[in-house]
Image (cartoon, rainbow, N blue to C red; front, side, top):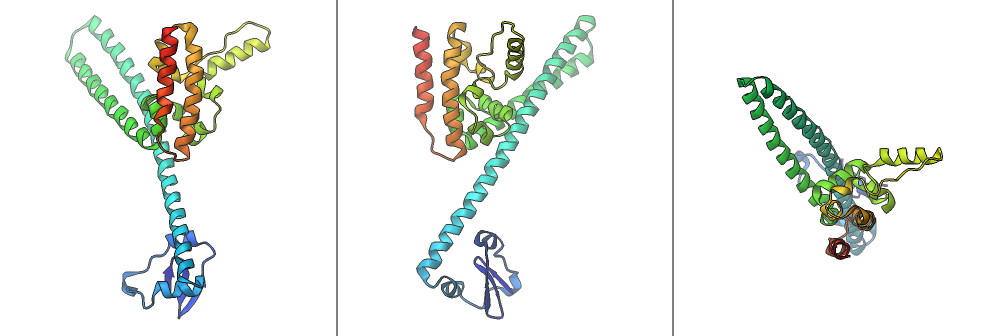
Length: 262
């Protein structure tokens, strides 16, 4: 029995596949039966009635399989980025904790342990830089527009908080604006339900962007809303594999400059 992209061939008889994409991916034959004792094109012409139709269907199936592979790779890189961000956060916490302990030890006594601990902290800082670079490389590949609007690290944190690039792409701008500030948001809502005054957060993860945190408090909300809207567009373009749109990042920069001048 021989496997072709459009079905199986056995004793000269063709069993046409009911799933060309599946048979395309499984069209592999043992080396001891190669070369095939028939022309795939000639058999294909029998199945599809003409050479033109044969290549038309083959092209369509090949594109479908290629798109499936691309989507799989994007999703895998997506999960990889999420894991890297979580590892980065744990590493940052570890470094901060060890630095505090090192200071506590130095206040009591200078020792070889203190020196060794400092060296380990230095190594961990180096590892932090490596992880950040890896995150930047991954996000630049799977979410170029998102990286242009914000930056790779903030983009990665948005993807991590949303759960995936796909989930982020389907979130409204209002939710993207407060990603990372959910606890404060729910706490404010809880107070409001009790009839108490409460301020809802104006921004979450995106506050880390210099276009927001360098503005006066009175203007941060406006910038956060504008940026969140552009992030939503960028995430959708990236998820649906659109082209790089440099105008998105440029509009964010112009909006920031407008708010600075006011």
